[in-house]
Image (cartoon, rainbow, N blue to C red; front, side, top):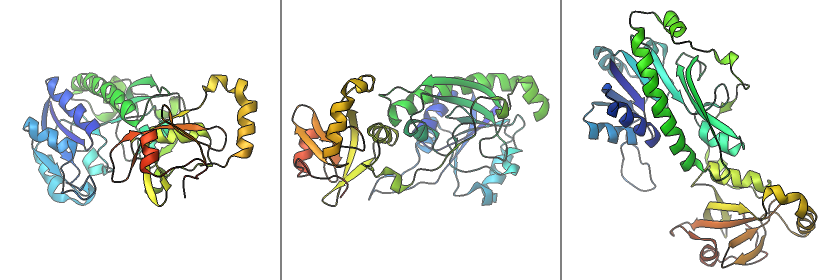
Length: 336
């Protein structure tokens, strides 16, 4: 079974490696072009391209597969059996979807139909979802609308940031892709309608949850709004790890880890005290700087503690050291 793998980030590269290690034949990889992936650095290949080169697999890069007839022709000449797509970053046109004999299949990191689109892992954390998962889906022209042949869910823990949850989902994705490839290989000779029936594919309209859209993360999403609730701010820091930031004296300060002052299960016991504090404090105001714990900052409801962060031009450090580097003082207002 000749596979062409489509993907771009590290998450997808790990899936590619696992598929190859499982004994499947990947005859080519399609990925995004080399880009400046860190500020001021030279052009860098995508993680999928780097992995493919290590594995000795031919690589095709395309700015827009819809308008790239050269790559389309190269791929069809490879006579592929199946396309596997993992976080490729472009919509595939119908003529591409119709190419492989055994169909075009996508591993999507959400419990569809929830969080269709480009950034499902980020939005599942930011939205404070309790669970997420992986769906293996037959691709069609709509955005992540195809029927599902495999699905597995996992808990989103309060300690899960984007990196942790992505790693967890990558492992699930590899497992389900390898399982799905084994099942798909048994459908040779069937057209897609009979193939989906044999694979017991489930239409998304028959799954739990209302359709929602995980739009691409924008630059402005990374800026912390201290007028939001403490939990919402912490979920943004986790969901956009390691790039959520605030401003102090026109300098950008990334916040890597922050915690609530009090456990949410104990909030009723301390609500009176915290509500009293809230009346006297402004969102973004530094309440306390503590060498042991870090920087205590007021939000719209409860204070949070910045445990680790990074002032632009400096290395990651603990909250107390960050306060010194950033010239923070009690009663200063972050975000200005």
